[in-house]
Amino acid sequence: MSMARILVVEDEKAIRNVLRNILANESTSHLIEEAEDGEQAIHLLGESTFDLVLCDIKMPKKDGLEVLDYAMEHFGDTPFVMISGHGDLDTAVQCIRKGAYDYIAKPPDLNRLLTTIRQALDRKKLLQENVRLRKKVDKRFTMVGKSEALDVVRAMIRKVAPTDARVLIMGPNGSGKEIVANQIHQLSARSKQAFIEVNCAAIPSELIESELFGHVKGSFTSAIKDRKGQFELADGGTLFLDEIGDMSLSAQAKVLRALQENQITPVGAGKSISVNVRVLAATNKNLKEEIAAGRFREDLYHRLSVIVIDVPPLNDRREDIPVLVEHFLEQLAEEGRKTFSPGAMAHLASMDWSGNVRQLRNVVERLHILGGNPVTEEEARNFA
Image 1 (cartoon, rainbow, N blue to C red):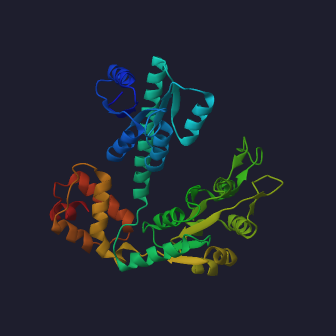
Image 2: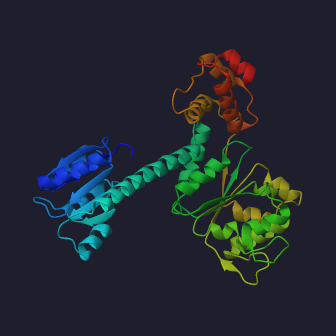
Image 3: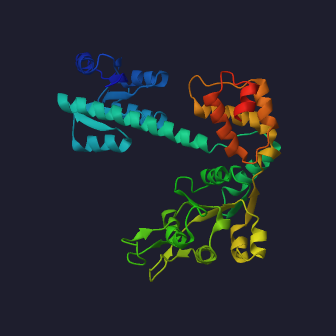
């Protein structure tokens, strides 16, 4: 096992020594601290961060259950293994319900104790890794910039996110429409439920209905088993229909019915399924022009555009370019990341960004790989 910081809470010194020796034999790299009663344990928990706590139940001043209650309220991700010579099933159940990882009766079986410690520490590492990955994912959907145009978008997101209103997000390719949709979901009451994204432009028109609404086995040649659609998978959460302007008219009709009735019918099914989904949509097309050309249903447009958010192109918010460059550099290299010279930054700020934020990210990544440190203006001119 790798090094872990472990707190042993036990009022009997002899047992504390036994537990310390067991942990030392398991790994000499563990940092072990001791507390002789519950009060001292609470004090130490407030001062330091521990990867694991071995805690007796019957102790003076404050017992183990009180220590566990305090820890679960303030440090809920710290695994507790409770140890007691007064073991019974009711006490074990009570400990687990309060949040303990496990309960072991005295005298502890050595193999079981070591196995439990290893598993508890592994679980702690897994939880920490999940938090780290979640933060990394959240960073991907951070709205970066300090321009007035972006502040307008942020204000709209804050207003509409707590509601269930449908939102149509307009803007050119690469401007950050997906980020806006994700922010609306994260700030909504549905944030703990699914966020399902469907790129309507990437799915062939003959498959879009199956993708959105699912299908039953045998409904078409390749339907070898029942399949849930994205509407059903997003039930209780948010469905983001990206590039909805590319959806076929037949699929548009079915989406309209789903929005009107909160029901979907899988391809080949004889009955409908009720769904509770918040729909967000995005497009880089002018849907009013698409309606005039007969390529988009006007009634669907009105269903989707209860609120319209326009995401500005990067050329309209050039003051955000230095902030975005720093953000992308942080993503590209967590350690020893490069810097851009003032000349390189000025050159980027003067360029035409027809590909918007997505294009800028690609350029920053290219310069990070090919340029020196700092990246010079000449390198920016050659490689951007």
